[in-house]
Image 1: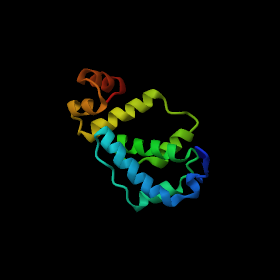
Image 2: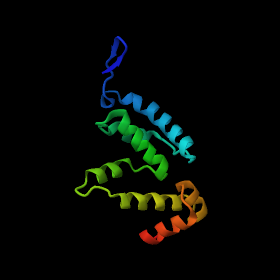
Image 3: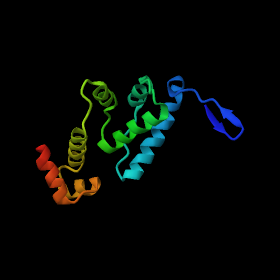
Length: 135
């Protein structure tokens, strides 16, 4: 429920309005690709169907975070990321950093200068991370 002054708006949870997911996905993919200066991932009917099949217990906030990960990682891994989050061992900061560095390197065909620029790192800092994670 959302209160705006004297008016109360009841907005049903996202799981009860799957028809909104396509428009939200399109908006968030465009927004985050512009914000991060990355190419906008293609969102086809299969991706929309996968998004609509999710429960989204945190509603739009969770959808927004999932789509930001899609833009940053450059690939669709929604069900894999959810499975990883529900696994017995949570992802660590080390695992997350390694996957971000590896994804940036792959997107730029292992061009260290471009990957470092995308990640907001210096080349020596990226080289240290590459050595740390064996990349």
